[in-house]
Length: 161
Image 1 (cartoon, one colour):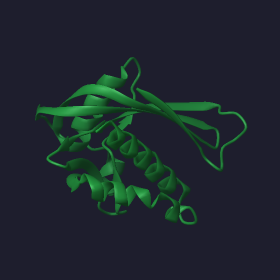
Image 2 (cartoon, helix red, strand yellow):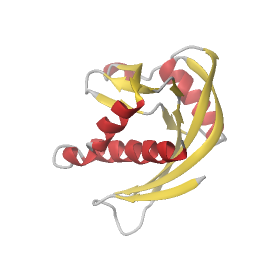
Image 3 (cartoon, helix red, strand yellow):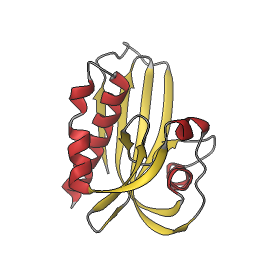
């Protein structure tokens, strides 16, 4: 497993808050499952924040079911990514996962407002979308950072293949 850091231009000298989460890389027949926020147009690898007492693997499985309605088994953690923005340190655990069944989507109110839904995209198309992260720098540091995170993870995933 690899560990990488992303240092945001707006990071503070020291972080005072930490948010940890997990994300699921699910690839089937050259397609990757992403969460598409249809209102904003954003694409993200399924995942989210860890709850109290939850392991990274448990978080990955729970968040993936909530966002996609699919039950997954995390097979291998291939990346831990540390990101630093303002006073935050974000920790993202990325897992290669396999689908083991169907569950129930349970979107948050914010995810429903953003029109979140699972969609399969060709892996190369997803990497291309995320590769344009720098084009969002003047518009949205949040989107630039999220796309840089996802691009870094997909690049690392592809290097394993």
